[in-house]
Image (cartoon, rainbow, N blue to C red; front, top):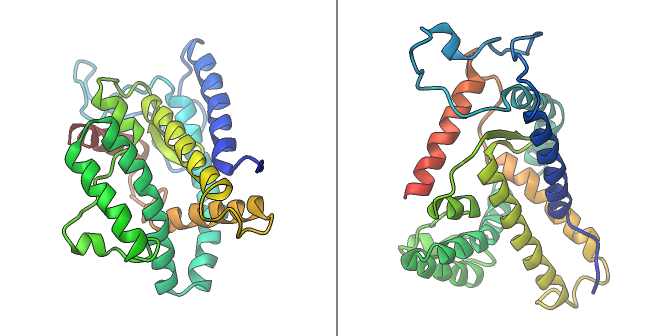
Length: 269
């Protein structure tokens, strides 16, 4: 049964266009990031406040820094004036218990990415435990609303395709701030697109040939858009981070450093 493209596929297309734009900008002479005023940000990176012969530990490979800082600022406005108000309404309408059950369902779906990438990295233990988690939480845990697998000694083995690429020696490449999603890198953005594609194919199977084939009443597209919207809101609901709440004018630099270091740890584990 043919249906409309999901929000994931639309987002992937947008990311591809964005990367082409950024790549084109990268071939031009470097622009000064300290031209003009940026909201609540330092006008120069931390490294410019120390001696020139000192390599500051907070620096990173960020050739698209001017673009990234502007995107970081865009994300702040989007988050504050659109995303967070919607999340606030979501939290106000739904009881905490219902929010937790929905988070569990979406987290259970994310296990598909964990399973795929544990398998691609030939991690036998992670593959076996993730398979067990999916079976237990989908059945006993009622589609993931509960997590009995964790209580039974089966912890999450989080993996994504960005980590898989890193496992096989692909470096992170340039740092990149994505619209809405925030900190990433060229490698992790590629991984995000692959994981989203796998997820999209899973939803296709679920509605076209899987258990939901005959229960949607011809409203597959509306149901999928609704689920994608709820999942997006739930994802932001589970993240405590708020832009420009650190009290530091170097928040961009610190967030970049924390993200890149975390990804090093994720790949190395």
